[in-house]
Length: 314
Ligand SMILES: Nc1ncnc2c1ncn2[C@@H]1O[C@H](COP(=O)(O)OP(=O)(O)OP(=O)(O)O)[C@@H](O)[C@H]1O
Ligand SMILES: [Mg+2]
Image (cartoon, rainbow, N blue to C red; front, top):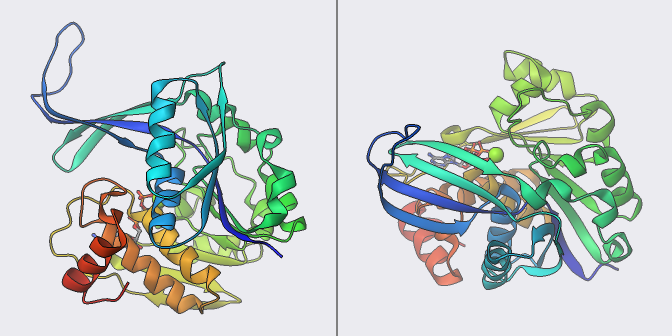
């Protein structure tokens, strides 16, 4: 019997966020930013941190360098209660970083992938996996070492008895080279947003896109921003409206927070509709504070915001 709940396999990077930048950078010149913030970045890590914050027993498997940013990531995840025993260090690469230049509602990002590209099938602690109930993998396209073995990873996880979920995220190269026909049958919950699903299937409408993956996907959960989310399983559709936040601070990490909420109820054995609703609630919660994890600071603050902003229970 598994004694651990969730293993997240994924990329790790810090976000260096610059705000209040006076104009756009130009070659050969220097401009100033008024604010700087170094935070836990990466889709997978935000999902893991928020999953732990809402009560899932969460472990992370990833790769960092032997540098200060790596130590910062370990400390950030541990402070959120995420167990880091499966995070490995490499001397061959530095820890990944995204430099975020933030301009009002828009952002210009530069990412150095570093160690996150060097995580491979061989580095996953397979001998330990029978101890877990569920495997979640996120940000497929930027993890070069994971990409080639994605089908093998889900095959192995299923053979060891785990339930599985996958959030591909956006492909920065816009090539969408993902073998969905062979991989999705091994994924219990496929969790793209609408734009990603259209790009992957090369279709113009959500109906056409869902039709394209209908024979290979088990449960598809589509994130629809402030329109909420939609699940398709066994030919049936369930839609769940978003929770209204009149003054969202930003939507960074809303999708990852949705994933953590959805998986929380899924692991509790709740029906799909409740999984969607709780995913939506956690996505909306994320929009009440800057960045991906600030709204999930502690149980008391989560409870307070849910009650005051969304009239909902934890
Ligand atoms: N402005 C908003 N107001 C209320 N809820 C929101 C808002 N934006 C997002 N959400 C909630 O969060 C969920 C996930 O957000 P979204 O659809 O933006 O995911 P995503 O595009 O995968 O995000 P990410 O960029 O974090 O990967 C939505 O399904 C919705 O429930
Ligand atoms: Mg997303």
